Amino acid sequence: MKSITTLCLLCAFCGAQAQKFVHPGVLHTASRVEHMRILVEEKVEPAYGSFLLLKEHPCAQASYKMNGAFRVISRDGAFAYTKSKMEADFSAAYLNSLMWMLTGVKDHAEKSLEILSRYADTLQIIPQTNDAPLLAGLEGFKIIYALEMLKHTYPDAAKKKIRRVEQMFRQLFIPIMDTFYATPPYTNGNWAPVVSKTYMAAGIYFNDRKMYSKAKDFYLHARDNGSIASYIDGETGQTQEAGRDQGHPQLGLGAMATICELAWQQGDNLYSAFDNRLMKGYEYVAKYNLGYDVPFKQWTDVTGKYCSWATISEKSRGSFRPIYEIAYNHFVRRKGFAMPYTLEALKKIRPEGFERDEPAFGSLLFNE
Image (tube, rainbow, N blue to C red; front, side):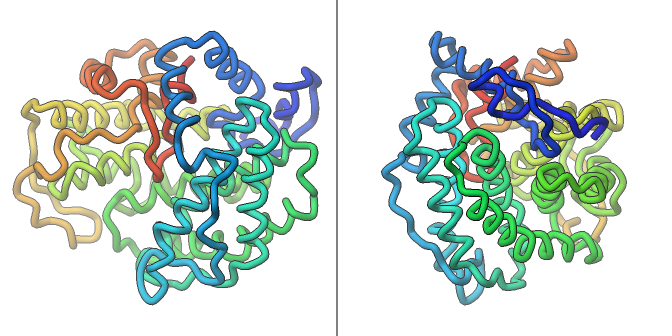
């Protein structure tokens, strides 16, 4: 983070400049918010199509009925029954905050704040089960984004409620991610970027430069399947999980692109790391899922546990996650590179819609 002075999100509404110490910055700078609002107002495609998908999504409704809040949440183990329910609740908090920011309809802000506040008042435990780091990363990201939007654009958000949600995040989510970082590598590569995108966003939100740097360094240099050099082959773009299925590599790439976009908004270019290796990974995955042949080699991963895949997997081949606009926006629109297979994939799926583990709605959120 080169500077801790940014435009407050209220500038998108009032035009005033303010001092602000924190900013996740994937889509929430004042200028980008205003740009998105113009795209919506002028019904510019494919951005407007993404907005319509957002507007129609059940979790983006101000009338959303909560499943929780729960005292304990988990993706696996004894409390696995909370998984889909709490995922929907946190998605609703995020999507309603987005709707508030884009439309100015107060009911959306109130719904988002209600969900976060009820969890802050109720949630006590996230058990240290196998999937705890994924929960902290996937759901924590939504919490930080919703918090950031409400804190800086919704004047009626009581500071006490915001602080209580922040306290919940510090006490329950951050320790799980710290534990993941401190544990020797043991997972497939999508886990680390899922954790790191949330850890980095939280570091920026809380103005904690050590957290930000920790996530950045892990992405670049960690001895883990989820570091950029370990996850993507520098010659072909093959991902570590290519032999597993086609969903998880897209989850990993989307999380990596989110890390890079967070850092980009802070003045750090992680997109270009290792000769734009992320772009190579995107092109490889897009090409294979479009039906083309790609090279594949069996390799030894960092953990030594995921080395038995002798061929690329056809499982879920051709099913595209909404992760492509974010990379295309940077490498093509900003930098002028060619991503022919990513573009071909986008032509199939535009406008990008929602997927609960990604920022999603990329045709609107990442459209410069």
